[in-house]
Length: 396
Image (tube, rainbow, N blue to C red; front, side, top):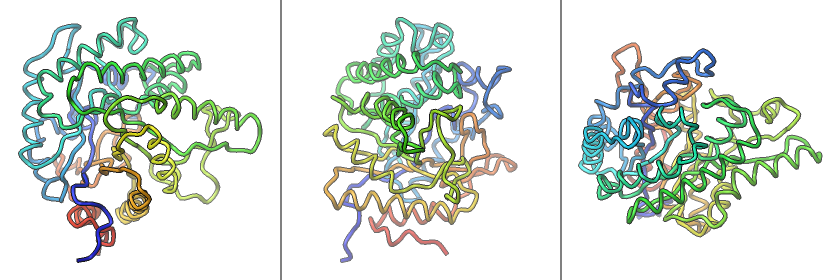
């Protein structure tokens, strides 16, 4: 028998987030941000891809493509639409969603916070509110009580470093602030939010999903080196040191070249570098650095996001080949990587960038009733998932 590149039992799937796919999340801070006059969002999320109603056929489709796992998120603002007021209807809805995942043989990774906050909390200061941790812990505890037996894995906070960096230092995401001091304060608060969730969830296996870009000084000078060291401390060390949980979710997309002389703090990709529809540099070797860094926490690793926004699906296949090759080599070198969840399962609302960037293994025809379109890359990914062999990642 031909040797496998990935072991039996390896978790293969795609990832989504509630606000990006459900549609109609009118009660959270991102919906408010999309509709304010100072928004960075190029368009509102609207109906997204109507996954709120189409989740069951969507999961059936993913299972038919060879997936055995799926990462999704719960929308806090649906579950707790007012402080202390929990919606049983919303909890029952998510119970049906999780039962559908299990019925289709998809191991659930359930994210408790994926970028969005209920408006009532955002209006009171969001993560800087005095009782934000208490409120988050109460929400997580209720979810654990109601849905814990259907959650094989829970992701406490998605990309806490990006929540802090984009929302409080760069002003690109809500609440749109540009304060280095608040950036550092929120970073510490989000690290505490992860620990709070661990305590509230009880016996649910839980971990945090960290965005771990390849950080490099844009120039070989003291200013760039110091800025890069500060960013690495906030995005890596602040979360990986003494990290609690049952696993680490590793999320990787690109290299970030740190330059404090640039208004946003990052230099553009080098001249001639291949880039994605997001303008991000293709830099697959950085995934190994992310895995190696996360491994220092001493916990099993799961790649919970990795993918490319590409107009040409052949580019997606090449991206998968390069990055899955990195995961294969990490496994061969003894790293404890348990799964790979591609971002994303479907084209979706890509936050401030709207619907232009296409990340999905499955496309969405927005001119034809949100029709699902299986891309060749989805079929190729499925062949790897079924066989554990990277050589099967071919199209045409």
